[in-house]
Length: 303
Image (cartoon, rainbow, N blue to C red; front, side, top):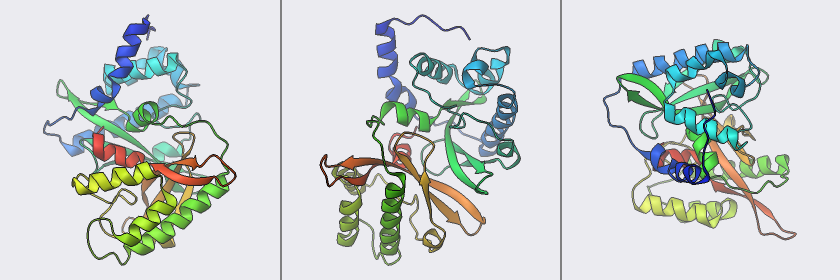
């Protein structure tokens, strides 16, 4: 793939249009099985290829680039190429990693997501912790009756919305804060009696979340734009979420952390809630707080 010459003006208009371009919803009749098969085929071929290459950049500029052209829209390939030129990609966006592991093919899980339109996900197996602990979202479209990957919501979120300063966080403190939050929040959900934000719930959110995140959730709740609780991606409480809770540093973004949700029916961690953390109050009493939910981004903008 040749790197195109981009003027400053063209680059500005391209980046300015990213949220609009990627937010366009597609209403075609989708065959879920075909879409899942397409994503499965992509990752099977891509990961096999990746095992032989040094990096995504090398793949894009090698003879084997056809695999990306086969499964991705040109818009997505252009987007990735521009981010590479700007040195804004630190890991392969299709796997959120710089290293390959063969277990990703052997234990691959591709599924349709309930949030957003035509969103599918690739669950990544962690062979060291013996569990699925990362999730890559992909938006699928029909292009000339062929299913293709149009965008990577994880990547788009990081570029368009995640503009946090690079601060040194105490990972253990952040994980403890999030563990305490979910223990209190899930305990609340276990006896919640009706829809809407209750007083006890708001106190918990005020303790652990920034004001702007609370405001956004309240606004979306009043406008009936949330189809699930954004902190658990569900409407019903599951006691296994506390018993088998795992909080860890996330793969995407500098200050991103993950809450892994256990699914007893499937016998595995089957969903991941991503949380972006900030330090609030620039003084001796800085507190870690939840500032954004990339999963919520999927519901609102349907990327």
